[in-house]
Image (cartoon, rainbow, N blue to C red; front, side, top):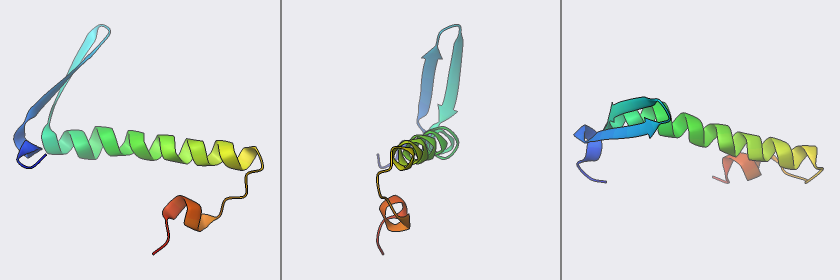
Length: 61
């Protein structure tokens, strides 16, 4: 991981190829997808009446 900020990452998606540098890949592709999936899992669990609170989503300090 260390030194990967400048590494070129290439993603092949069907008819398209995306290229990123390491840091923009993390900030603009990986993190938004991670937060989306975590939030969606949280929402599904809440919808299924699982008792979750703010600390369960954000973590305890």
